[in-house]
Figure 1 (cartoon, rainbow, N blue to C red):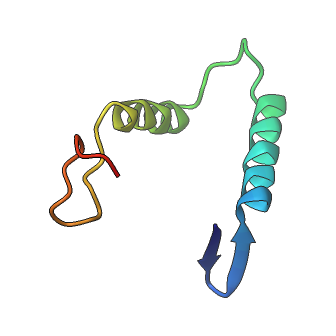
Figure 2: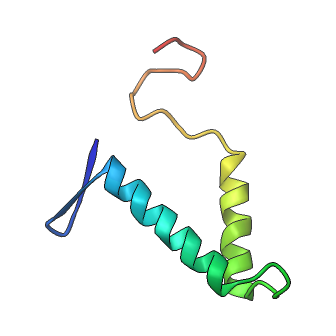
Length: 68
């Protein structure tokens, strides 16, 4: 599946490569002993919070318990 944003088409492989590179650069900048900046900590907490909520179905009339 490809993502299209502002005239740029990025496929799943390239999207994953970009995310991996961002993660590697963040790891090199933020070592394990350094405190995490407050804004980054807040964003990470928000991601954790969103992971535990079930997303609504994008198909009307479909329930989460129904097989796809």
